[in-house]
Image (tube, rainbow, N blue to C red):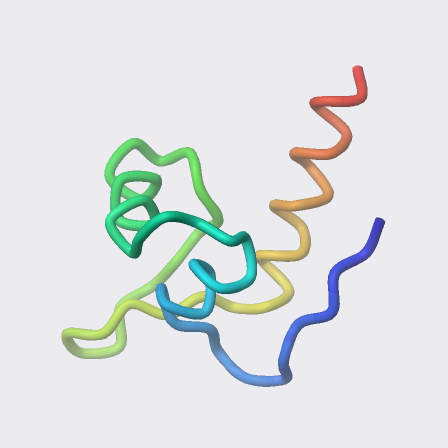
Length: 66
């Protein structure tokens, strides 16, 4: 399965929508636990590279399939 991502950096809110999460707090918890897609700060804002998110999804799918 491949996911279609926008051609721009993603916000935590974008990940909530993309993965149908309960809240943005889930995204921040993933970051604290280092279990979610890698993000980076731009000033005070957290952003995600869409290619890194796609790689993270693919890794999760491979791990779950094993």
